Image (tube, rainbow, N blue to C red; front, side, top):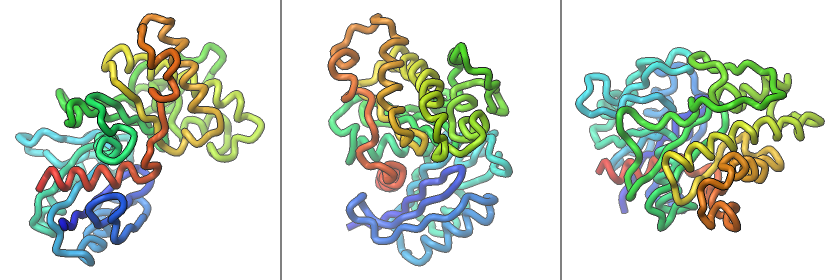
Length: 292
């Protein structure tokens, strides 16, 4: 059986694992995302304990350069994450292990993981969106992750703000884009406390959050026309948020898209990830397999 290294690189933490499937993870480790050099040293140190590996898969926060003909392929492009713009991720791993390295966004990776073992099984077209430290989205079409000019940047969709929400947004590029209004740090700044401690503000926070997310999901229905959308990330653990987002999405569409999934089946159309917190690591395994 193949032995793959899987890396889920997030803005807050990195998760690394070795195995061949979610039910065959032989070791898993988590550590904070610090500087590129420190973080990649941790990754290489962990994977070295399990060498030799057949391939490595990296599902990484972005934006990323995924163009193999580019001189900066395998690196992070301009990102809000301090110190990571321009960081090369793939080359240090190839130099350390001399094996194929699959590389894609964290959300494209999570989508691939859910497509193989989770909520995307058997579907031709679906999206995975994460709402956490940032907001990102990836998609799979006919079994392949969505690439084009760059890669999907769902977190930076421009959406209408709730008419009663004065928060200006905190995205350093766009201010009040989806991520600037609805990612975890935006909620913490707006309400003056972490997402898990919203307390008496939970109802109002859910209303504003669902307004933003619901409009974004409606835009994705209209542009991508997916068979299912999978909505994960730590913010989605706020009680009532998933159902509120479903209602707002349907309301935002205004009855224009006449599909049973948006009427009686919306709970099966906009869903939580079946793999829970392991979608990204599962995606890294798929990326490694594909690279091999």
